[in-house]
Length: 252
Image 1 (cartoon, one colour):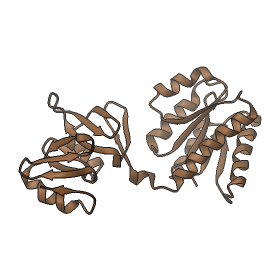
Image 2 (cartoon, helix red, strand yellow):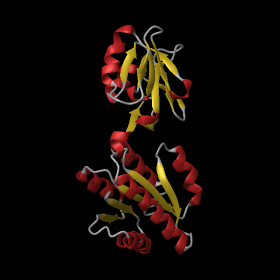
Image 3 (tube, one colour):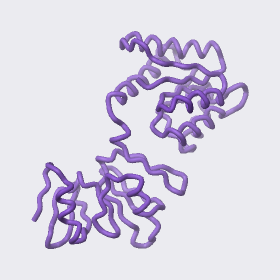
Image 4 (cartoon, helix red, strand yellow):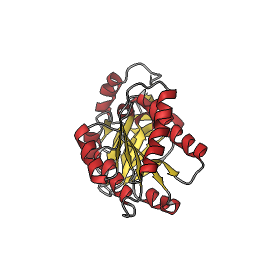
């Protein structure tokens, strides 16, 4: 189970959240689990950095009168541990839009003024999600790329088809996935260095070999689900065939 960190300066709210987590842990028979409570953002970050583990954070936004301090703590967490999970807990619902604009992916935003039943349900939903993630190897399933523009690309690797150099801009790339088309500033070399599961099939293309369904030798083309296609250099055809094991690959 992910270790849990709470940042909250109100003792009553500390106990409320800790008790909600404890009840969930008992109901799921977690046994021993780690849950640390802090009323100081820097102390929380210091303890977390020493652990070196990804974790689940429940962060109040206003700490000791400093508005949005929890958001600044979240930014540090996300920068150093992108696979950690963050939940904001606050009385300030008006801060919610700021969390979405901050480039911090929050799992939820829980309002303290909600009814006790609603509050506990929201906490339990977050813990359900984390429990399910704990059964998976999230880091191996995910593609994370931090680009020079300050925003991150965070996708399931299995959903990615290919990345191409933008024909109009040599330092701009276009990523095609099952659900999105993303443009970002980087080079193919930078992406390949960050994610070696890609295969460079052409000077302008990186592909996810798992999603290739057809190789046409004569046309020197690769085909993917949803009708997408990209070119492949002749010299890369045989290495790609060797790299793809099993699956439903056809070669014509």
